[in-house]
Image 1 (cartoon, helix red, strand yellow):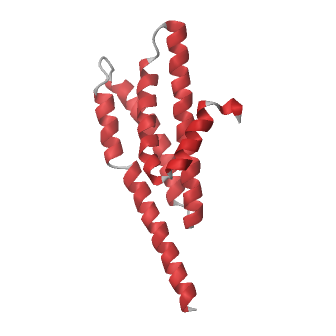
Image 2 (cartoon, helix red, strand yellow):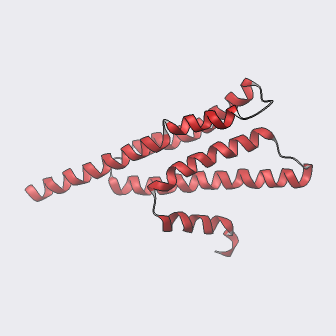
Image 3 (cartoon, one colour):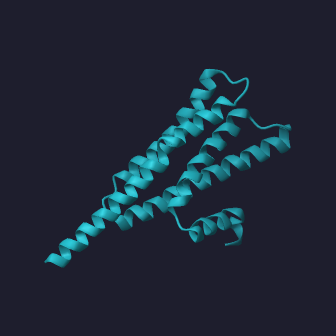
Length: 148
């Protein structure tokens, strides 16, 4: 009985440690980084900046809320990996749109650039929580998804 209690306590400790790391990664300095990036957006109106900020904060909040609701360490690790893939895919799609607009119009839509930059900061915040091998595998998959 004591061994089961010890294992349960250890699992809860690992769960709470990972939750804390996720909260730390997705709050605080991430928002400061968004403010810095959006503050560098010359010629943007305050509503333009607020719109981009609202969009990326909603993405972050949806992932953060979903992750923090998970009650199992193993499921939290899985959810973290899935959340990372989702954000990496979203960033990749935004980047593709930027490249397409640049090729077609000579210049991408500025809100798109700033949205992509802020999403990339979410991706960067999540990467240290995952193994290097996992991050590299996802990057390789997204670099050439048709070769799989």
